[in-house]
Length: 403
Image (cartoon, rainbow, N blue to C red; front, side):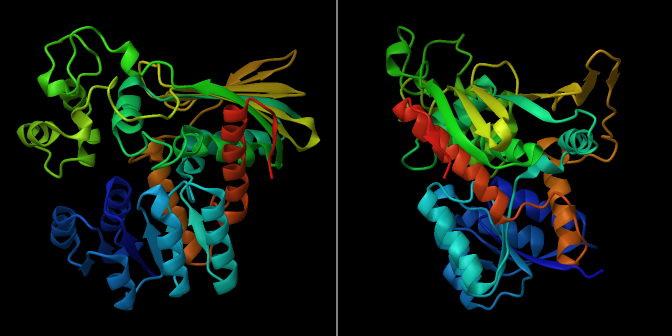
């Protein structure tokens, strides 16, 4: 099989992950160009990959970059502009989720793909994890009978919420996306994929309860580096020492001294009670699918660690699992309970092996080999419509049709 030529637009965390996979699997991919507006990131890209590096997507596209597919890994609000430009120039795109932060943006990408006959593959990486692949296999084998209802939960983790959704790029729905789209579009996709039917209606409740200035402890400062309080679990200096992977959002150097210096006075140093965040810190959504199947999804910031859980109830059995623990149990109604083995021996990388799984399947797909988990725009758009409907339902406190 031939090596796939990959160009990368946006060399942040996601773009770096795809580039690293290509470097580690040179028999599958070669990185042919990288674009980023950050000069330090461009320096790293040039040093690590030795390919042409650009400071704008216009320059990359006008260069006639040699690529089979372009990974669009920029911010949500920029996806329509960037994905459309790539497809107009004749390239297929590997599109970071969400597709776009508005329905209009999603529609623009869809219409462009149809007009130019291009493919847009959406990075719903959780489909490619051994855990959710096993869930899908059990459902498809008919062991549950007919699906009646599904419940899922996403426990974001208090530190991850503080980093990404209070201080970070996805803190404000106006400048990025609502939480149900920015964080939970993975889960919307999983519900649509596992149930295998279209969603018809959505209801949702939730709000921003805790990360507000009225909940700030007495005596705290507006920046953690200036704060006299030492026992706050959200103190930025502590969080980025304990979870250094998150520091890559504001510092290109892994050295702790460099991280702490870059942190001081930045948006990531802001007190979680004095940021400009407005996205919810908890939300419960309910969905009605074709055939009367129901589903619910709970998102909460208030968990000690990051994990996802799922329960699928069928007419013959129920399936219960936890992704991060790779625990999956089939409970037959009136019968035995058995643990479903999850093969994690080959798992590498982030998202429980989903990132590497996506890239390997992309390699196969580019070589004309059918793969079952690749997400094209059609089904992915269905799950995005679920998210937009759920957010509208939350804001209006009404049941909303999923268009």
